[in-house]
Image (cartoon, rainbow, N blue to C red; front, side, top):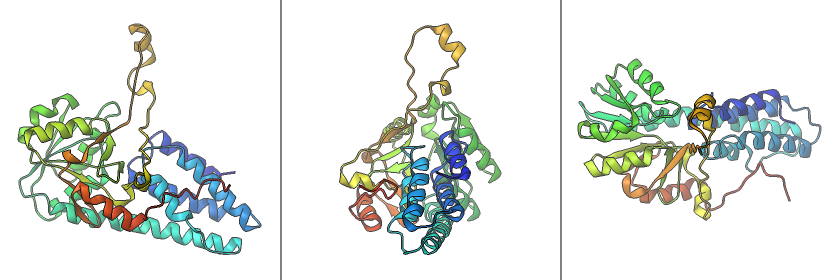
Length: 315
C-alpha cells in the first residue's frame, strides 16, 4: 500500500495544489523515493510491487501531464539489484538524478529561449509555465527590457500567477481577459507558452485556449514559441497513442447555486486543447530550439520507439 506521502502528493497533483509539468514530475519522483526509503518489504518482488502501486496512485491523477509518467519511467524502468537494499539504492539514486536534471534542464532551456527574445520585445502569455518564465528571466538577466500581456486564463485564472511572477522579475504586465487576446496581438512580438505534452508530430497539448490563441497569432503574423523541457515529450504518440484530454469538474466553471438558477444545462470543462504544428514557429527545449516537425527525431533519441509502463502489474 502506498505510504501517506504518496497519497498526499497524488491528491495535491490532482487538485492542482501542485501544478506545472516540471513541478509535478519532481514531486512524483520524490514521492517514489520516499516510498522506497520507507518500504519494509523483505523480498525484491514485494518491494517492486509496492513501488508499482505507488506509481499507479500517482499516474492516475493527471492523464494529460506526460511529465508525470516520464518521471515514473525514469525512476522505475529496468530497476537494477537482486536484493531490497540494492533496489532501494537504485530508486533513491535515480530519484536524486532526475530531480537534479530537472533543475538544470530549466536553466539551460531559459538560456536558449532568452536568445529568441530581443530588447524591447512584448510577449503574450497563456496560463502559467515555469519554462516560459525561465526564458523571460534569463532575458531580463541579460539586460533586455521585456513587457508582457498576460491572459487571465479561465477558469482557474493561472494567468494571475504568471503576472505575479513577472512582476517579481520587474517586467511590466498588462492583464487581459482571455477573449481580448486578438485585440492586443498587434502589440505583441512573440506569443510565449508552455506545454503539458508534445506529440511526435509536433502538436502541442497545453491549457485550453492555447490553440485559439495560436490561430489568432498566425492570422496576425505573430510568432508563437513553445517553451517545454523534454520531459513533456509524449513517447506513446510514436506508436499511435493519442493524448488523453483531461476533463475537470464543472464546479470550476459555475457554482452549484448558479447552475440551479439557470436550469438544466450541460457543462464541459476540458483542461487542454491541441495546437497543430503548422501554428507553432518553434519549440524550445533544454536540448535546443526545434521546428515542430523535427521534434520526432529528438523524441526517438531520448525514448526510443517503445512506450513501456513500468508501473503496470506484470502479466
